[in-house]
Each structure stands twice: as structure tokens, then as C-alpha cells.
Length: 476
Image (cartoon, rainbow, N blue to C red; front, top):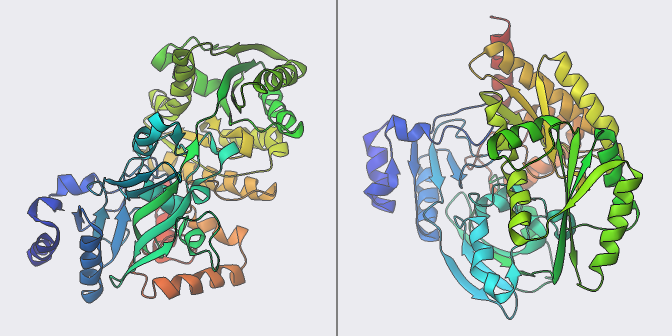
């Protein structure tokens, strides 16, 4: 690496905030579960918006790529430095700037960990509703970039429903405030545009979040099913009766085996699926709603329904769900988590075909996902040291996403497109659609220096990475 570059960046953020050692850089060459890897030229760790602005100005003057990165818990390669360049990690931008409990608002820097937002206001009977499974590590800036969801967003909505204002830095270093504190701003919804743009329009440095009152009461159930189809049908039937659970999560047999082996929670190993169902709301209404759900589970042949009777039992059930994908690491050296969304009514058919795709590619498939809103997370297990397995995983992953589209779904529910799914974007969007998106992107990021070569299917990196994986599989 050019020593002048490191020295220049150190003058902006300080010597201890510039990483150039190859071992240190390797920490930033991928995100949580993506196949692709790309080594950055340098990593910097700013603490303020002003420093981010100076970094963007420097990158602009020297025509260098610059890539925003939070905690690296992403699942689509959205924080990869695909052309090298400067990775700007927000982990030191970790201050909650103010809390206004009366108006249910909170302002935080982009690097604040998701769960810390809730922790800061829990005593005031409030929380930040979007709760990705990685909420103990993922950051609010990354949540904004990917429009993250989580188990409880079935009832409470995804990130975009809980952000009212953003401070952003444009690629040329200009600092801009968008949105406000009000519930219903007038004019163009620039906050909505920025949330979910995967860092390709602007660098988010601060966010104002809407806080949500904690529910008066809740009931957490674990329904055990002999059949994955019966569990899937239960999901559709609950929603069809007009009940909107706070969360409705499904784990299949392979996932249960991994979780039970890791944590010994007492889950049944002979079941084909379990549903984790959480209801919340007014204390007076909850018993009747719970009885409705129990009746639906019974009609769909649930073998048993367990209820968490204490806070500890509830925490244990949620711990099992949130650690499930990590537990699958006991079954294979590597895994890739897909993120297609489908209509709830199509769950049985899509799951059956997804298993068939996995079998055709000689792979194991586990399922743990947000069943209530049809957000699938099929997990393919493999060994990433074997090029043939890697190529089969890429092919199977594409086929599963194409399956979701065929049933009227989408390529992503919360993980974004990044580099992992860009090759199949043209199957969901027309050329005119994609061209319109690119024109919007060009207004903010005309030279594609900010998080380059993401989302769109005609990017060089997207094409070359897929081609390299497939050629490697046949020894070309």
C-alpha cells in the first residue's frame, strides 16, 4: 500500500485509526456469510461526521473508491471493497447523541449497536422495534443501509418505518440533513429513498429513530409439528384470521438438531418443524387471542404447544432462534443464507421445491426464517475450501431466488442485493426499471466511487465473481 495514502488518512482520523497491516485488513475482506471476498487497500475508523466528510473529499480528489461499513454482519456482500480502496468503518462512531422520551425519539451515530438503542430507553418503557437476529452486534447505520427487519417486524415494521431523519455525507464530502422529528413529513420522502440504498447513494453518519412503547403483555409459544407443511399452513391460517403476531418464526428439523446440539434447550429432535409464536398487546385481550392461536395450531395437527411461563423461558426460546444460524456451523465448515420473500400462502410449495433444488445440487438445506411475513432464510451448508461445492452453492442459491420470483416474491426481504444477488436483478426488474434506479443513483453518486459495483447486474465485479466461481467448479 502507498505509504503516502496512509499518512494522509492519519492526518484526518489519527494514526491509531488507520489499518494497513494485511492481517488486520483480512478482517474486513467479507461480511458474515457471503462467499465473495475482497481485500480493502486501507481501513479507517472515524469518530465524527466531519472526519467522514474529509475522508470523502480526499477520496474524491484522488478518485479512490470509498466503502461504508458497520459491524460486518451483512449477508449480501454490501460492505465489500470490490475494487480495493478505503473502507470506512463506523465502529468508533458509537454515541447516542440525545434521547427525547416525551416525543419518543432518539438520535444516534451510525456505529451504535442496535440493541443499545433499546437498552438506553428500556427503563422508560420504550424500545427500538427493528430487531435483526444480529441485533447484539449490528449497527443502526447498517440497518439503515439494508432496511433491516427481524422477528418482531411482522407487527412493528422494518427499519424504514422507524427512521425519521438522517445525517448523510455525499461522495464529494457535502454534509446534508434530511427528514425531521415529525411523524408525517411533507414533500419528497428522501429518508425512504436512503433507507435500503445499501450505501450507494450517501454515507449515513447519524440517524433519528422513532421509539415504540413496550407492549402491556405478551405470550410466547413454541408449537411442535410432525410436518413442515402443517407448520407452514398454520402461519397462513393465523394471519388469515386477522391475528398479527408480534413474531412468527419457523425452524426446521436440521436447524433444531443444530440448536439442540449446541445449547441443550430440550427441543424435540423428531419433529419436522417448530413455530415460535409471540403475541403481544393489551393484557385484557391477550388470553382470547392466545386461545385462537392454540386452536389454529390444533387444527393443523400440532403435536404440542409449549408456553414460556417466565421471562427466563421466553429469553431461552428467543436465544435459540437468534443463535440458530450460528449453531448450523456445527454441521458444516461454511453456510450461505439466502433472503427471498414470498407470499405466505405459498410457503409449503416453495419450501418443498427449495429442498428439491438443494438435493439436485448435492447440498444440505436448513430453514430458519420470518414465516409471518414470508421472508425465507434458506441456509445452504457446504465447505468453502472445495471449489466444486462453492459453485454448486452459487447455482443453488440463484435457483432458490428464481423460485421465489416465480411464486410472486422478491430477491430480498431484509439482507439487500450487494454483490451476492446482483446477477439475478434483471429477473425481477426490467431494463427500464434498472435504468431509472441508476439515474437516481447518479444524482447522488455520479462517479460510482461510493460503495461501487453493488446492486446492479451489469457491474464488472458481479459478472467476474460469478464466472470465476463457476469456472473453478469444472477446473477451467
